Image 1 (cartoon, rainbow, N blue to C red):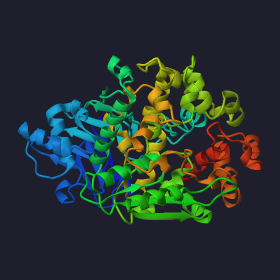
Image 2: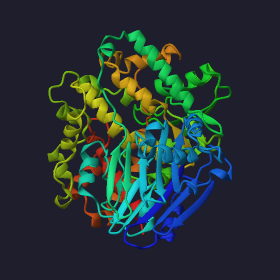
Image 3: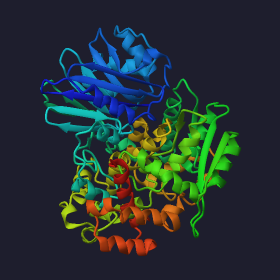
Image 4: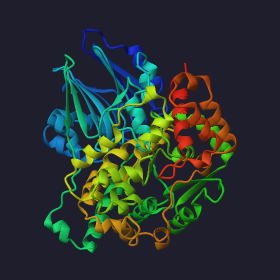
Length: 591
């Protein structure tokens, strides 16, 4: 897990190595174990290394293979790199390192733009071909690893974080109204290529983008999630689906133990993270380190789920660490949380993951986490509401969207209003899904769009802020492909995640499964009051906010006067959503 950066020019200039140094300085936490730059005239790559596989200097990056004429900067982990290495050796390739970076280089030489189809893992990388002058940018199937772009006439820059591109300079930092409309209506999800800044874009997941020497660009999508089912799938008994899911999940969890450093688990006490612990224990893991976090209760909103994480830790005898965060510490951490965000992220559990990661990084360098199970196995409450829908796109926005167009117009200043795009985007996406089932359509957009630019991004940003690598077995692409084939009736029952709960009952204590669904609670950011409210008021009344002119003053004052009155359909605070954007902008664009 690392941070990469690069510059490519198309107008005869040499790449600006000083700009790479500025980008690298912004990503020290992503890679505290080493740094490097390789420049070849118009192409320069930079890298910050977090050593996890092949800890020796042989696997330092950027890495170049003079014989093949290839240079790479890579962020992520290829879990099947040993198997691929053996296959590539059979094709005549020789290896000088013991890591996965060199495997990508040889795979590219063997298979070109089809190489990512062979990878099990999470990855973003850039490859330069010496002979052709091409540069390829590649991102994994679920966008687990980020890759941001800034293009200006004659030049491309890219990096693992948006702030790194801002630090490099010459970026248009004006607000993108289309991104703003997505953020305010699509539950803060801003899909590729947009970011909140006009001058920064992001590479879509499952994409190979090839830049020719003269600047011509071509995208290749190497993977698509299909919900098509065979007759055998439709007739398959529930018990068989359970066995197939259990086998696939075992493999997914086992794959993510590949490391030359210890691997722990973020244990919330819910079904998903508890299943990971149970499967690792079943596989014979001893002395497994597990970690959970909790916050103060506000009103009747519980701030922790220690009861359940303690149950799992005791049951499997894990080396368990609990972190309790008083509200005063939460407030103190928020500035660092906003610095860690590559994009404004409204979910309350950002601060939870940030503080948990800071503690976890003192014990391990790699953790497994349960993100993705709800989107893949239909755990959210809106899926049953959509079953049988005759207008799934609009019905989906009715349960997932944050506000109507009229409400958006009442909140934003007229100059910041873009033409409606979020609802049209959802409709286009769902129309392209290869299943007529409305639940399949919702699961598809949640697992390939919402998941990428909300939970997955959140986990990457908050863990990497503490030099911690998070792995997500529920996003193993073979497991996700299997889950997509399972009929909705096998997923929607039992309060959601029916088939996964049945699998869980074969592995972990039933009490963890047969309880009301929990979330990562941070009450102080849902019911904003006291010092948090003062911080929010100061930000929204600041000179920077006034000059930015995003929100109507009367609408903001109404939210500040009664923070608990405006709660979105998914239970979020409208005030916190507005404040998150302003606080992020003030943090990332300061100076």
